[in-house]
Length: 55
Image: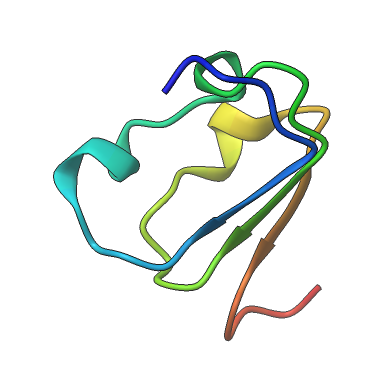
C-alpha cells in the first residue's frame, strides 16, 4: 500500500488485506472492515470497526 490515508475501508476478501497493519497505511486513523478479515491486534491506536461486531 504505502500511501497515507485518514481512513480505509476493507470490502474485499483478498489474502493481502488479511495481513494489513497500521504500518501498511501511514497516518491511518480509522479502519472499517466490512468483511471481518482483519486482525484487531494489528490496529492498536487506530479506530477499528468491523461490520456485524458490537462496538
